[in-house]
Length: 212
Image (cartoon, rainbow, N blue to C red):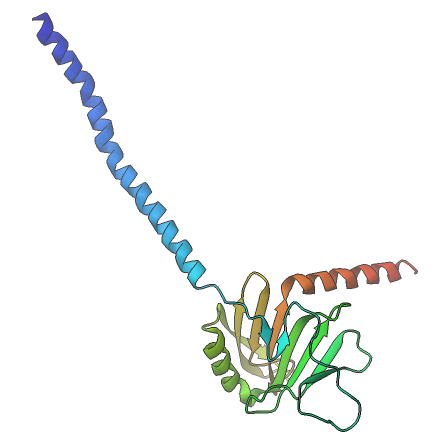
């Protein structure tokens, strides 16, 4: 009788343990599913990341300008070259840029080491669709797509489509309307170098302001 009694008590003690194990199974399963889901999301994000270019329209990014300086006078060659825009510090314009099938201006802003941290294409709004098609063909779908509404000085409203490709170092933005309703533009920005240039400009402004 004593043996039976002990066996019964052992069986009773096992019951809560079995119940706990049964109760935990769904929880463990949910945890595994969540872990697998997080892994799948991470893989998808990595695959959809923008493959940042090393150059843009023949201008290398992250390096001092390797394109030659334009020689004054009639052009001797059709090779791309650059020249300073007016008296603006660091602003340059490129001549004989690659043919895109329409007229455009390729401009850039460089730091003190002549490393471009911003490049832009300026062209007529009529060329927006062609630009959009070429950029998607070259770089894939944009990371972000927006449709904005802008107004001119007269108060008229216009649709403005903005496509953005962005990676850890570079950001490229295509704007259907840029500066005016007649122009569209592409902006390619080296994010860290642009931030450094802005910080330097702000420091210089504060230093000059202290003279007042």
